[in-house]
Image (spheres, rainbow, N blue to C red):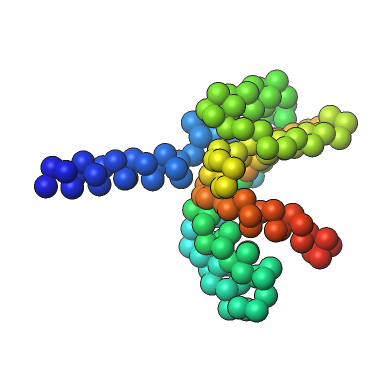
Amino acid sequence: MKKLILTTLIVALGAGLTFGQSKTVKKFHEKYKDDRDATVVRLNNSLFKLFATIASFDEDDEDAQVIARISDNIESMDILSVPLFDSGLSPSEFEEMREQLKKEKYEELMEVREGRDRVSFLTQGNANEVKNMVVLIREEDNAVVMNINGTLDMKDLAYLAKSSRKFH
């Protein structure tokens, strides 16, 4: 009985770590979610399960099957958009959040810059799968943090990237 309880506890803690939100992102969200100019969007697992079910109906469409697998493995998505300066958020504080995520073992998968605008994709995981992705978007007067909790297969993400020309 003790072994079963211990095993259950370890599995529960492991699941919590796998799908847990970054402490840095959580702190940012708590600080700015009630700002009068903030935009907050939360998409939960049920919505992604619905997407997965709808996409899986077309068994002959490989694109739909990939989207179904990706959707099925997303636990939640949180998006917080905050105006820079008006909310008290400075570009340096936003940059500091990026550095804190790296200390939490997030790896910068990709960064895109255009003028002062910057988009950073940070992930946890390994060569085969992405666990938890944070997308940081800093524009001239706005900052967006998108947090995707779940496990995404790198093969599925690569397929979508390769097939993205079809979606334009």
